[in-house]
Length: 340
Ligand SMILES: Cc1ncc(C[n+]2csc(CCOP(=O)(O)OP(=O)(O)O)c2C)c(N)n1
Ligand SMILES: [Mg+2]
Image 1 (tube, helix red, strand yellow):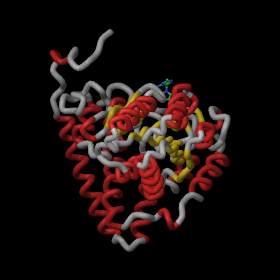
Image 2 (tube, rainbow, N blue to C red):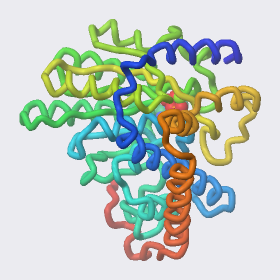
Image 3 (cartoon, helix red, strand yellow):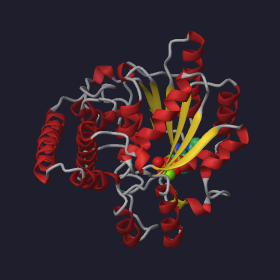
Image 4 (cartoon, rainbow, N blue to C red):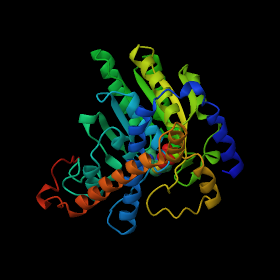
């Protein structure tokens, strides 16, 4: 994708921001800021651990995507279902996953929430409504529709949200799921984190339409494109979709424009995009923008610095805890796994 088309797509999403979207108070935004800092620092630490050879297998970070996760967690209830992609640390942490157990899991340690057997690509914790990240592009989407169908049949008021990337839109099962979800008016939210790349391929080379939220209009589904890097906008859009879902009005599709500031995965050589492009995108990144907004609302820089140092300490402790944590017992190698 050329720099021009990247620039063009960001302002169009930013046009969705208005004073009416600033729905949260400073008191509500401060813990969200704290969570965004926590996610950012956990993922930066994970990248350092990967560089030093401490992480086996693929690891994808969501640095730059934090607003989607934090806005979602504030708009949903703990018992609502969530499925996501292999790029799912941010959703899990935002929903309350303990950073110590999250880092242990990525390192393959026994105290990971999946006993170190899932790793970075398979975050889950049903007690937090996290029903599983998935390494197969698009596969988590019909899973969430199944959960939404179950909730609807039980009438328990729960809803489901599923996160996927722009690259998933071209999988056939996505469209089967959109069609049935709309037909059955399932209580589900489809959230596309459009970071404009599928691995190393820019969206301009994969998509036949430039605004991907229009895909689902063919199914009669409510859909909108938002600035996915503005946590208040994300919160407002998801809250509206939650209301529709709980009121029995069916699914909503949200395309949140974002950008990943780190590579597709740890070790990505980044030969497919320029450093100028990444630098240009930093001005839209969600954490710096929330920081700036809080300052404009009168929060003292010192207060934000205190939050940052507290988080720094917490993440350092979590990393040390995980590095010192025991490996799984060899006798456990064949437990908790399926074979065919
Ligand atoms: C069915 C399937 N095809 C291909 C792959 C290889 N693959 C892994 S990530 C990825 C790109 C997905 O891009 P996108 O959906 O935009 O998500 P992002 O990584 O940008 O968050 C591909 C093609 C896969 N994991 N599953
Ligand atoms: Mg993508």
